[in-house]
Amino acid sequence: MNAYAGFSGPVTIKIGEAELDYDNDAGNLRETFQFVGDEISNVEIGTNGGAEFTVTAAGNGDKLDFSQFAGVDGIEDLAINSANAGADWAISAADGQFEGTITLTGIGDVEQSTLEANAFNF
Image (cartoon, rainbow, N blue to C red; front, side):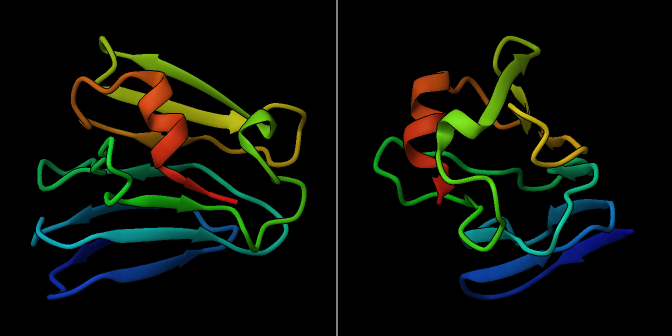
């Protein structure tokens, strides 16, 4: 499923088991991607050349929210790997809590410690 957004303010996108390719056309709003249900499939955020997932050291950027997803209670439950010199990040379950991969594409030169400290809600 492809989703293209053009919202004018902060938005929460609830993601269940379906696969998702998401891109925000507006680029000027903050998004929270909340994972719900029993499984996470393959999710790509920022795949269509528009505004990508935004990470800030101040913590006021976009968020991946696992607070409603059983078994992912902290950063230690995730395996986070960079690709393309830190411009892309692949996030999967550290111990089989879900089967898919969450890919953040084109987010720029972000240190893993900044990503881990500021892009997640548990």
